[in-house]
Image (tube, rainbow, N blue to C red; front, side):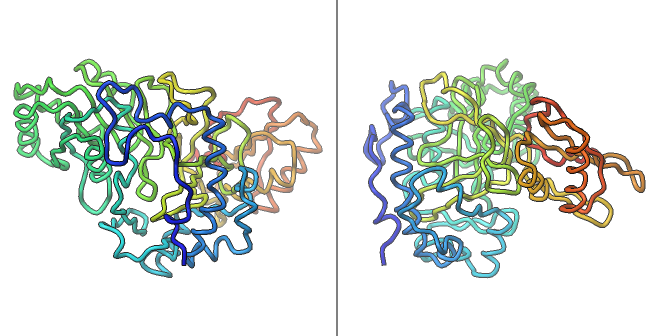
Amino acid sequence: MMSLAASLPPVTGLAAAPGMPPGPTAAHFDDRETRPATEREEELMARLPHLIRSAKVAKGWAWLLSGTDARSVTSREALARLPVLRRADLAGMQAGRPPFGGLVPEPVTAFKRVFASPGGFYAPEAAAHDAWLAARALFAAGLRKGDIVVNCQSYHLAPAGFVIDSGCRALGCPVVPAGPSTNDAELDERIAIIEHLAPVALAGTAERISKLLHRAAQIGRDVSSLRIALIGDGPIDAQTRAELAGKGIETFTTMTTAELGVIAYETSAHDGFVLNEGFIAEIVHPGTGDPVEPGDAGELVITTFDPHSPFVRLGTGMISAQLPGTDASGRTNTRLAGWLCTADQAARVGEKTVTPAQIAQLRRRHPGLGRLRLTLSGKGGKETAVLSAETRDTTPDLQKSLAATLLDVARIAGQVELVAGRRLPNDGRVIADERR
């Protein structure tokens, strides 16, 4: 039986041998980052049939992709016809077929760690070099061989600490596995370490890093060696970023999940997130697998070629959008807008639950509509539902037809507002529950 790792064609264009970090004067991690976008796309599409054929060695993927001829999946259009596996389904499959839902071609003994992630699913960590694909992101943040990093991310159950740890080791950066601090005494301990070792970077949540720096100023300790803050758990607000910049610390964040590792990362341009090499990203209408119009927000769906834990169209559960152009740092891969909101927008209306998938049915029944948004407002028995739809046809007939379809698919009697042109917010929200 052929393994996934054995069947995938080699990746070309590496500037350094595996295990060898880039040189100290290199502007990019390797030359894959700056190759023409068409070259990258051709490579990814050429590798898709190998991925699907070998992933189906695992019983879970064989079931999900049953009837799929791997040879025919050589384009984004063909990929978009395959089902989306969402995180809730992933947890359900793992519960029914422990430990990994039949989605991992290798036995559990092939992995060096298994993490118990929120949501009821388990994430294996391969024994491979830079298993979470973090080194490229850390290099873009300015880390170089020999730079010391104090890692205040958690090493307990979730992989956050090991994501940073493995990326640093791949770059040749010593790591202080500090973990999170819960009181002043633990903060003081970490501050003393920073003063003694003079590390370049501090990794952790935005809140943890802010507390540590505030405490250092409060007790008069020197942490001026720090020039990089690595935030791996989501966006950071502009005020916190500015406060850190005032202390001479540049902040870099990533788009990271327990299943996939580092999906995308910030560069010195701080203008969106550059997609990591080896991923295919799609933006789809929430609740469906249908790609959105270019530039529109939707759920981020990822396909990865990880030979140990492959994913074909994994719905991340988060809303993002593709940004135009390329990153000012010279990296040519897709730019993403980051996490805009969650794709799980289901809401209760009386005794009914309305979901993004139901709103998507409206689009299918009424071709030509632009963005859609169901806004819920009011309290108790005075709740109202208003469906806003972008359309060129603003006639009363369409208004009545949409109201009838809404009642049919979601069992909700709501008002319909027709919006001429592209005037609804491009934030990926198809159900806006203003009652919360």
